[in-house]
Length: 86
Image (tube, rainbow, N blue to C red; front, side, top):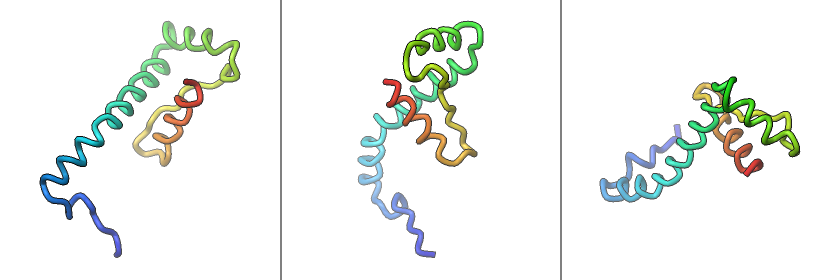
C-alpha cells in the first residue's frame, strides 16, 4: 500500500536514460565487491599483503566487509570502509 514502482511508471526513453546514469555507480560497486572478495578469499597472497600495508595505519586490524545480499546494509558498510581507507 502506497508503494510505487517508479521504474514501471517511466517511459522506455526515461528508463534508458536512468540506466545510463546508473552505469558508473554500478561499475564502481562491482569493482569494490571484487576487490573485497579477492582480498578476503586470498589467505596466502592478498590478505597478508593487505595486513602489511595497513599495519602502520589506523586501519591495522580492519578487514574489508563483504557485500552480502541477505545482510541488510552490507553494501553501505563495504563502501563506507573503502572510502575511509581511500
